[in-house]
Image 1: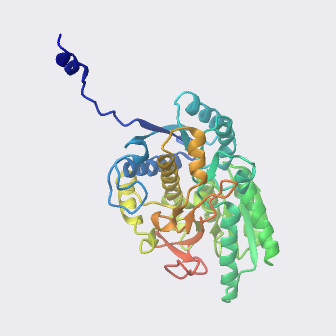
Image 2: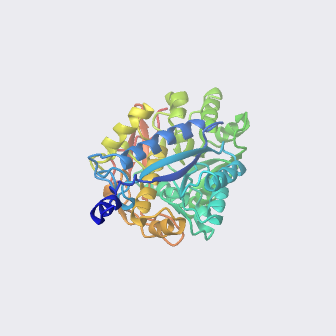
Length: 407
């Protein structure tokens, strides 16, 4: 064989390498009392994957590229795990996702009690965990280096709630007597601790402080306590099943609160309003997101349109946070140009995503040394005519608060 022929045979066409997958674990309740949360989260996260993996005319990071440019157009693939609201199940599922499914990072987990255990597993395996919607303040006070929380926590939310109550009081409304109603897990306990301290510091009278067992079969005695106390404002911290039972029990006992200012959770879940929304007209919740803020965040409409095709409902406080958690994580992986856990972790720590390029009323997404997004500014929203209206603070308010509520 001649030299020319030999050279010709040695030249092989260079085949384009397919973009590798980026596998991300998702840990939410997909069954049990909070199953609807997990179902809605799946729709929110799949909407984010659509935007990341395909080209969209949306002013958000990664939206205008097909896949992660930093990894040669790699596509994101999600692996879902069901923690059923059980902290030990959540820990085990987190380890399974890491060791068997080989995920490079995780998003979760709604219940603060589950996030508390799952994040320890992620820390052990040096796998980044982006917390979408678990709001216990203590989660980011444990010295973990691989956990990052995009949402505000309950101290931040509660301060906004009391700022609102102060504003209502200053405007001449009767706001003096408060009642706390909280479940006995880490979420309810931490929420009530913060609210108790703020009530004392700001000069409110706490006429009832009712702690109940999560997923209780009856709340009759607890509602009777609240009814007898006759507060100006009821402040519940409850997940969906308990929120529905609370509202139904109040109606059965003929108790109609003057006002409800809720710590979101179940009171941000559409399934609650499908069940008892007719009794919640005018209730107020702290929130991370307002669908009516589209003039200030243009990405809201196209993202909501994509979400609505899947979920057949609008984005809400929970699904907006779940969507953004994955967008923030994917942006960090894109900038890291790696699926190595510690490298992604460093990219997350360096995040500075402008609020204007999100769907949230954040000033920025930027994490402090504890992994908390300090730019996640809470708002308050009111349930009016079967939709939500942003009412506080004045800088983003779309409408004025109705007071008292009319549910």
